[in-house]
Picture: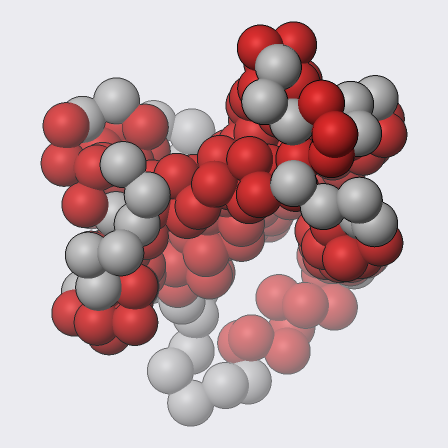
Length: 230
């Protein structure tokens, strides 16, 4: 179909299922409660509650600024990746000529190559939208932080509600950031398709294993222990 072999379609299906399945596991499954992301979301809520008790909130502003800067970096990187992908798409003949000289001798048609590149472009565009929206949500979080009552009113219900709004907004921003970063990770697996369908399958499995270990492995759990706020 469209010049792709049956193995190519199987590899692509595996890629989509791996990405979608991992995303569902991280965001809707009950297993997400043991993940590093979920634990950090609980610490976000604790951070905003502690913020209420501080008269001077420069530290909190610096934390929010670092979150925004990190998100802006990835959004900019996404734009560079999009530009690079367009450059590859515009130099298909040259790229194919180079690949044909490599020892493993990749053989593919121009149409198949360009569709693969377009698929990579779609991944980077998706990542850009996620990072840029995350950056915007962190901006909203900074505004909500500025609107929180002073420390003398920390015990009031309105102050607690304000802190919860900041926590929810930054958690939502973090969720979109994680989706964009996940797209970057799976883009690395997608690159294997330019070599062969088998490499695509193995690379996707490797990416899935690595990011799962990062979220559910013992290293992060050992650092946080069982001290995450309830």
